[in-house]
Image 1 (cartoon, one colour):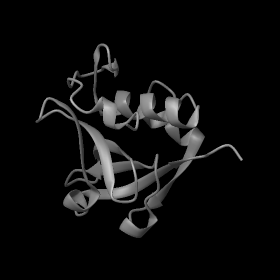
Image 2: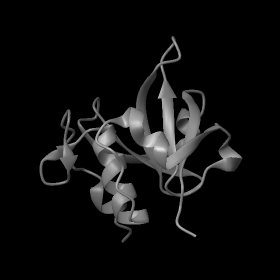
Image 3: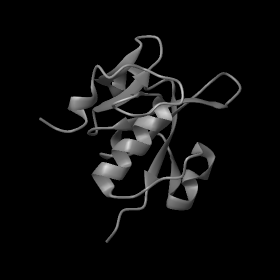
Image 4: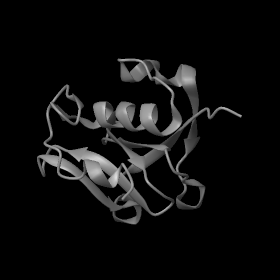
Amino acid sequence: MDFMEELVGIPYKDGGLSPEEGMDCWGLVRWVIERGLRIKLPEKPIAWRRHGRVLPFSLAAVQRYDILFFSDDLGIVAHIGIANSPTDFTHANQYCCSVVCEPINKYRDSITAIGRVKRAD
């Protein structure tokens, strides 16, 4: 079983950073990037860009470990998730109260950008 699949069902916790305490969307993304790419992202979400770049969203462009940005009607990032593959992503869903894995296609109209963390060569 993939380590991201093992996170499904972890309780949602605002400000949570680990499977033991629960996770919010940023805590989940940080945890997965640290374990999957061995890169420690900053505690504040706004500072992650030192480690990557933002790309326009396209289903065809999604890669494993890409951060998917969801924006509200004002264009403000309201939620993030992390791609497991080009078709599925994992996110800490506060409405389901847990970490879930869902098809990216289900949310394609809400995803506004991709964050790609620089991978070590």
